[in-house]
Length: 292
Ligand code: SAM
Image 1 (cartoon, rainbow, N blue to C red):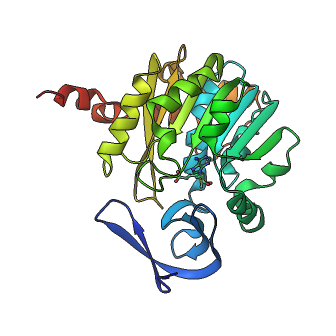
Image 2: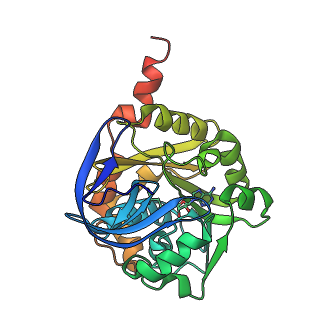
């Protein structure tokens, strides 16, 4: 395994990189599905790295995980059952379980060895979420789980490796998969997926957006800058009935308080900032240029 002992050379696009000194290697392991590492990086502290892509870092993982989880959770009147596909670190599970409405949270990750690495080396990320009696962790391909499960959920969160990264997640960024996800949603349910970066990977991003728009009547996009990624990460929601952009900051803060959810980044005003992305990110620009 070729290791950049001195620097982590993290791709932010197909041609550009962030170079960060590696201060310590907690673990490096080739699992059945990916090359997994827990590294200490200058600037970002402890990080989970999969196949050379930083998944999350201790200094800003809450930017990502709070932004992925709370907009859809708060937009739902009373989310009781949540399905998470991916989310190996356990931080998405941690954020979901903060809502006192949640009775059941199922986390399905393909890589059991990675989850064990997270349990041991990423305690600051999962903070014991794996042991919550409401949580069930299933080691399985998320696509297979969704195709074979009969269960329905109020919220489905796709916290996968990037659409431009490992092919183990490619099929979970497709119209076929999203139509199965729709079948697994209760009335009033909402899906959210991380969708990589519309600026550096427009092809992948807009194909995911198009796939979701072809399945769900209501689609919202939002995003925020995450320092360790070096770009704005985009999220896309899909629902039959819920438009997350309709929530006012007051409603967001009220629901967070009512459910006892403590957050560091996500608040009512942040929600407003998240969902007011430039037109092109919402796909209007892409549609406007089609056939130009
Ligand atoms: N927060 C990270 C990001 O946005 O870059 C991603 C979170 S997490 C580390 C990504 C997870 O997706 C990993 O734990 C990986 O094992 C999981 N994964 C990849 N393909 C999968 C699949 N087909 N089914 C279930 N989990 C999958």
